[in-house]
Length: 248
Image 1 (tube, rainbow, N blue to C red):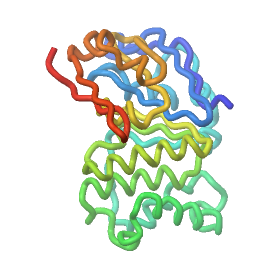
Image 2 (image 1 turned 90 degrees about the vertical axis):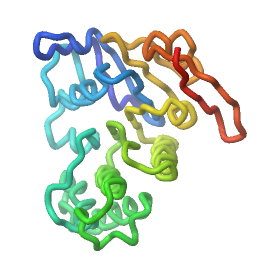
Image 3 (image 1 turned 45 degrees about the horizontal axis):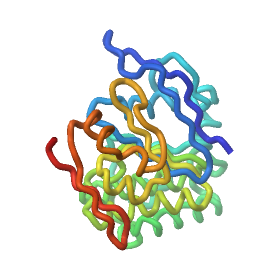
């Protein structure tokens, strides 16, 4: 089943073209890593997909009403802030607002428990979220998105601020969600993590999609030099491909 369909997306902001004729589709079971240099439009593309920015082209999510969209796609933005001194449990419960019960039904309780457990936040459940470290807050916000229990998850740099162990856990969680039948689109800066965990990569640069396919077909020397101005050293390990970026 197709979960996300973007066709011929064009975005101009402050008289500058950000994206031009960008198309992207995502179906159940896919974990797509959106990669590209800073300023390539990765965040913009996610916001456009959700109808949060003006654009020309087509987005199946933007065409939905707000309630339907909230039950179809959860969104973890790049700018993440917890504004109120609520407990972690109550913060995660906010993800249930689109559903009947708004955080108070049995289904809500089960979804909240699952999200808290999958993010390893059991010991922080009653703690005020503002008293968590930055990385712990990030995990709580991922749990909130997970509790929304949508077929599709859009995450903008979800591993930012996480320690190495939690980065691996985060990417492993998204891979597992895809294996369970959901769809995940996440912007990722660590090419090694992207290569090891994503089923597919989309390289966004020069206002366009430069490459779209399995990691080994996208992370070529030519493409990485064109997009990032770097070369890489690839090392095959028992745990998967390791990629070391190097100056060109």
